[in-house]
Image (cartoon, rainbow over all chains, first blue to last red; front, side):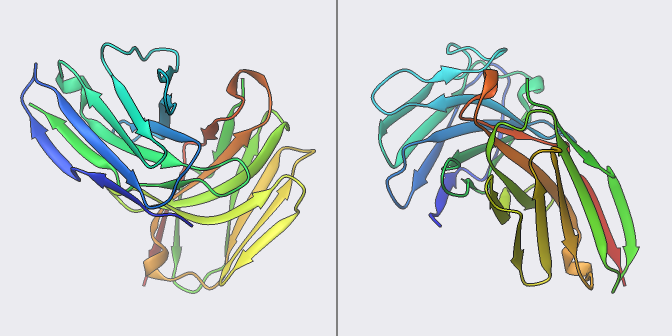
Length: 113
Length: 115
């Protein structure tokens, strides 16, 4: 299976600032996704990162808050904008999942103070 | 809308026990089902993938079964070890409905294996 490198692995940020999380896959993949995992909760899909077009957001998530880029088939970024303490979560990048297993990066643990 | 439920929410067992984790899903239109392990504060590690046409998959001490028609899967862990302590997540890759082409996760089972 492919390997996903995600960075940063953790960060502590001031409220009102933005953080960009990077996700690099070691092979070309068609499907990439971004998830949020709030403390003590399971994973919630934020959006599907589409190569060459705008990301597809799930209900409750908007582009102004979580802009996503996907410039090619191996790389994507998620920005968490204008952060508040409620954004403190683990953010995870994922790829695959249709005919192959879905695999995940190690996550970015974000704390907003 | 697909819903995935995992039972039990938490499980504490002594080392050496065989145990079963349960996962159920409401919509049988799935491409596959996957079991993951998550250590505290970390990402997800894939354990087993079962395609919708398959009945079970095995890897070492782990065995996962799938009954798509009844919407159920079980993860069997043989001879549990303290290193197995983690949260176990079940997820289905949806083939229909509003969740088409996406993974839906259960809430997880927190497993503690004590020496």
